[in-house]
Length: 236
Ligand code: DX5
Ligand code: ZN
Image 1: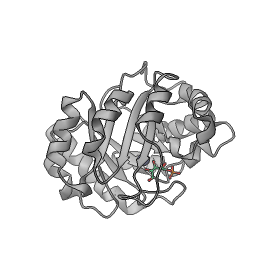
Image 2: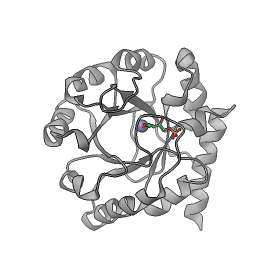
Image 3: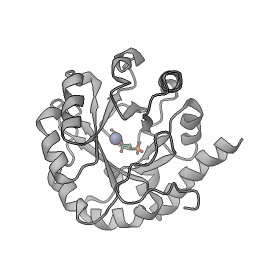
Image 4: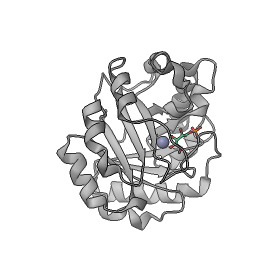
């Protein structure tokens, strides 16, 4: 925890800083508040995976669970909307206490979704599947706070990191540097102490991890270990 950025409460922190975002998807859904409490001291953000059974085959949680968790923690809620029609639910997520929402570019209507997130006071993110090219997100880089490069195909936890995505992470980072853009680059899927440094080297700064954290007997230690793996790689 020593190297933790001084993020307090729902402050998202500074663009580009290392952020560890445990993914609730691998937590015990019957004990969510306790699980969040355990991991909170080692977490910067809480990553909330919302799946609608259409954009991805799985179904997970929605605004009522976000509202319940909001009463238990001041953590920044990073909501990843794996939904075909996220626009129908953005208001509900904002009302429930979401801080940032990320929509997939593959569902279309991205300009309007970004505008809607802005109107609602949400931090705005766009996500790309592993096989969606960089060009799909390029038009939005000046308008968003976060680009999420999926390092697995969305839908399930516990899959293997797809290293080919690093080329896209490098391209996003290069554009951010070239344009001095204020945005975070997040990776999600198969992130652990071996793959987080690889993603960091490519330019990612927000690291989502589900099974590597909640699959661990002491989730806070696993989150700290991922942070340390990134910092150690930075120091080289
Ligand atoms: C996958 C989700 C991820 C998932 C990652 O569709 O978006 O956030 O929880 O799980 P791991 O870290 O186990 O790959
Ligand atoms: Zn996710």
